[in-house]
Length: 414
Ligand SMILES: *Cc1c(COP(=O)(O)O)cnc(C)c1O
Image (cartoon, rainbow, N blue to C red; front, side, top):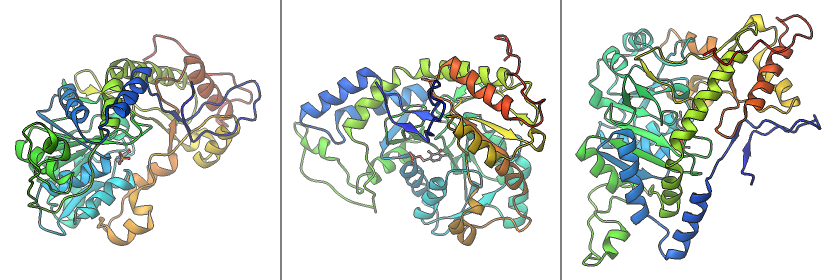
């Protein structure tokens, strides 16, 4: 059965099926469970949502998980829960998804863009320190685990002069990421996950806030549904009352049972899918080893943690002999989908006009952005497809001898 393929280019190569950048895997149990919910007479937030929250919280080692409509809503709610004065400055990596910064704006706060290291795509203590030096200390900070690589949370908070209680993680790529031996989920004030169609646990749409903080969890639980003290499901339980109170401005950002039941079934496959991502990432790393002018992402060192491999993002250097933009085109002509994560926020008109940024610029992101290229990576990808992508990248390189064959590969190469 076929799902939706993202960024799927037309394949002019008749005998070779296209390699889509991403493909949404919905397991058969999820389809059956969705049907059951639709037949049950209760499809919005209800018992399945509560069960999904419990199972997800256990999975990421957090006391609480609150299911919401998207990661973007999760970020907005988590930031609002900090109760910062309106207009407070929140540090955000400039290399992130625009939705993460929109959430800061909608929470009534002001993004301060911080530069990233070209080697990791993430801020470092040095770039955070420079932003603080230039623009002053922020009230809070968003940390994003780029591609699923563990970001050094404590170090970054320290460089910003903030306690971890003022850090909210954008964990959209980080379901499966570990810092040391601990999963992302309860390492800062709140972690915000995404169940968007291309993410590691796809539902289609959806998000989750996880935290160890009882008050934050309770505030987000109310605020996700109009600020009401009891949701419709709880009001309709035996002994439940139609009464409720509203003490704060809320959003309409709840998850539904239809989504939650799909999420619960998908969660049963997550460990297998993560192992699959690891295998495929290692195969890319081996397969691209001998291609000149390409830098591959590195896995965390022993004891440093675990990469969730949401993305396999390479850097296309001058030595490759072709600009990234042309390479995307050429890959597309070969039926291979690729993408770029992300256009830095300071290159987007709205944020260039409204976000704070160091007057000295954001040189790391400016160096990295034109080089970035995300290759297809999803659990349904085959070894043959990874090899095809590696062969294409080797063949297109003008840094290699004309007609060069695929780079040598060994199974043992990490
Ligand atoms: C996907 C993504 C989001 C937004 O997730 P939604 O669930 O679509 O709102 C936020 N941040 C990053 C880094 C993402 O990749």
